[in-house]
Length: 464
Image 1 (cartoon, rainbow, N blue to C red):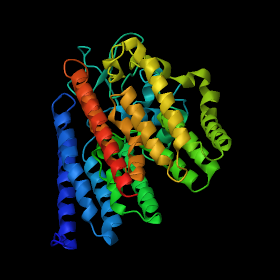
Image 2 (tube, one colour):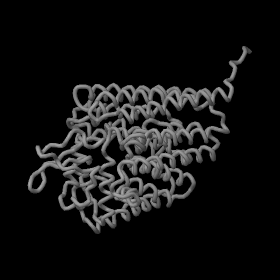
Image 3 (tube, rainbow, N blue to C red):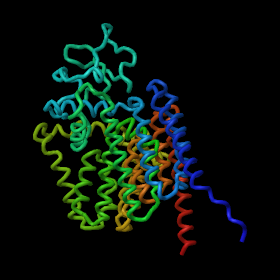
Image 4 (cartoon, one colour):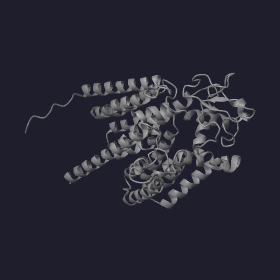
């Protein structure tokens, strides 16, 4: 037998992992501090740089000595989060709407009752979210770090400058998300800016990291696997810097899966219902959770969803639907001129893409429901969430936050490739580069998934 390759010393391995983490932190800080909403080239390059550094860092983390791995992963998660809040949200103003909904609720007003531009709420407007236009009727250059929205349909005329997107329409967020917005704004005054939700995003990120590390330890799996969530650029940019509420949905969906595996069907249903009442998207992961007392699980989930809405329905009636119906149309989910259903549109007319996606997702749901291993429901969840993102192709990278915890639990790291592709779709937008970036990126992900699946099956066959 030939000489074995010398093993890297533990101290050297830890040093290499530390250097990789430092490089990742440097990229994240530069990305958040230098990104300008008006500089269209900065975000795509920064995103690519972060993922280019992250993947080797995640691979190097495998060499961290086992006794130190959990501490290093957790420390890295904290440092990544600290780097991500070095600046206000860089590429999304969603947290501005979160803050406004929380401020309104803190004043005893339903967030579904008024649009942000409603003059009746003028006394509640903080300067970091709203400014009146200048004498010429225009907003001064970039008054808000996340970009400026304007609305002119005000009573008596005039222009309103605000950091909130779609200021003339009702909120689109479900009830548990609204309760979260209220909770975050209860302690800080209305003058505290974006940092409130960024810190909440950091806390949610750490909670998920701890939950993953705890489960990996209990099941005898290496702690370094959690870096695919803890150090991920997606988490840094979208869960923490952008403070997207999808992180809360991911935490609740993860709790639902872990509780179900632990035999706590009722608690799992409650957590899952809360996840769906946070962002709706987690409902796609349901088929993998219907293997143990499905009636009890569904009843608990539906009851939780309904109870969360009770105070809002009492206050606003059917207005709780908010902007959701119009949002789905405006986002192109009817299959027309939009980046939705990118891969299907390569082979089908645009008008067929929506119905075809429903058929494919239904078939995938049936397959996952019938093949779920009750000790590993996340294998099915990663297929459902990843399949949905590929088939529907929403150009919002934060939708992939729901995917990452299940990537860690299922060891299907190849699905991580979906996240940077969605980010590039988001940054490149529409014509002329958007459709091409979407087709090439999503096509490359399909190839990666196919190759990884074949390689995994060959290894499994060889090990029998």
